[in-house]
Image (tube, rainbow, N blue to C red; front, side, top):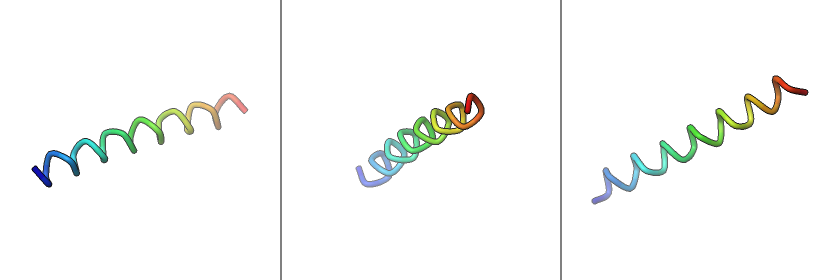
Length: 27
């Protein structure tokens, strides 16, 4: 259970990082 939650959190963080990187590239 804890591992699944950790993976979910990592995936969410990765999505945020990708989104911010894209925003930084646009700016």
